[in-house]
Amino acid sequence: MMSTVQHGKTILQAMVDSSLVSSLHNVKILKLVVHGLRLNHVIDVLRCFPCLQQLHINTLTSYVPNKQNDNPAATTVECVDRHLKQVIVRNYSGKKPDYKFAKFFVLNARALESMKLHVPFSWNNEWRSRQRIKMDFKNRASPNALICFEGTE
Image (tube, rainbow, N blue to C red; front, side):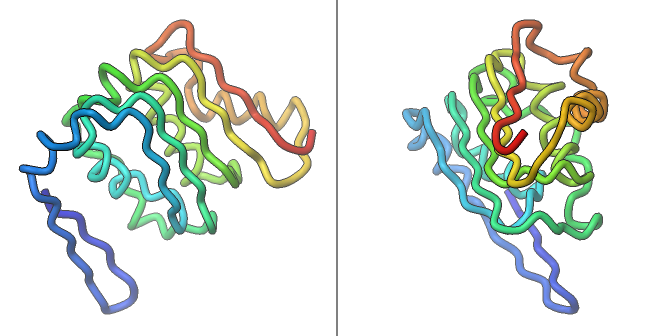
């Protein structure tokens, strides 16, 4: 699998070895530290962990140029489709890249039980309601999934 990152005129490509997938079947919890929520890049990583149940992401910055946060390919990701029960995102800004990132899991994670979004600023119920609408929460893949916004209310 190939993952591409472009910064200005510099293009970085990382090859993810498919043989790693078989050796990482036992990983149940994954913690990532990322610069911005780039959905396609996280999906490339998740493909290596087919039985993942918990995903913890700490985002250091919220700005992601739109070109680098394109919609994912139509293929399914095994852990998201079958096993992922909990997603935790720290420094969730509520901006378009962030809610599109959360929306992917809301609409595709059939085993999802909870998504915790840690918000680093003051928010209110109206803001939370708008976020749920943007994530298309009513059409969630897991009917029992809960979204919890944490932080300053």
